[in-house]
Image (cartoon, rainbow, N blue to C red; front, side, top):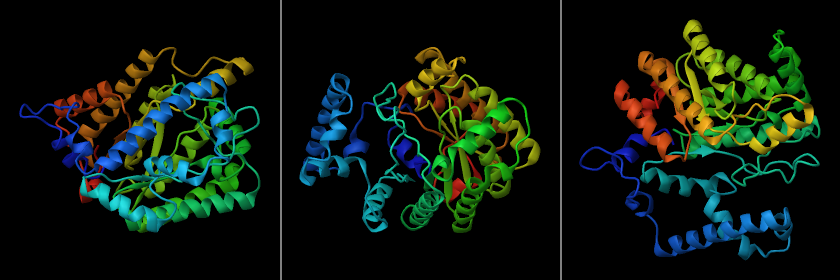
Length: 365
């Protein structure tokens, strides 16, 4: 994703050094006619999925248990790299030939809490979090993440593994710690118990293997504690390169303020600031929870406000990067064309180049 991005970008520039988004040559040149036809079929079916879900929520998910594997596999193959390291390796090798690395994300998430299973984001995607069952289940989740980190090393060494903190312990601990942080109280690592220990062990593994991990953003009631844990790990493992990346959801009204504080903290303490910037994935859940509990909706009031804040956050990190190239690393994670163009224009104005391959260790975009 970040690695070798420079090669991908150069392939989409025209003679005037401007992006040509309409040129699909780079995206499809390695695809066979059969693969393109299958992709068209899958994506067309997904459009109908959204219509069916609006008409009868949950019906498609219930149908999955009765569909033969032959019907499901085209969807699986389109969206999933594989079920094991052996299956993932050839897929990633093929992508790497096109200058693309990856974020290895374990997709089989636990079921949602009762009453939240049908919750959708504004785009229709399910915004999932792990539900606590028992400590031995969290141990199993940690082992799965450890396998993912090892797989990154073996199949996409310039990529990352994604970590979901709610999978590593009782989310009640995260919620209690987050409440304290928001009220200005001090929080200790001991209060987060086994969550902190499992997360640190995974970060240590990634550091030892020389690969990166991304701490996923989650729901508003858990996020301050997740940010706290991420910063502790960055202090420990980001001394010379961006091993641990935290995620900032820019649809949150407080995201820019938190980002400013964390950039300043990294600068004053001397560790590498590393972040993934996204718009966000829990919009409907957050609004409903705020209404139910009687507090202000933490989400920006409009899409335009979110987009403006996203671009401002990008500018903030890029400005910091321009002044501290080797102490800043950022992934701008968006499908939005305007945001991509804005990012590139800002990079050009500030004299920032893309990084890839071994150069990724020194920070950059």
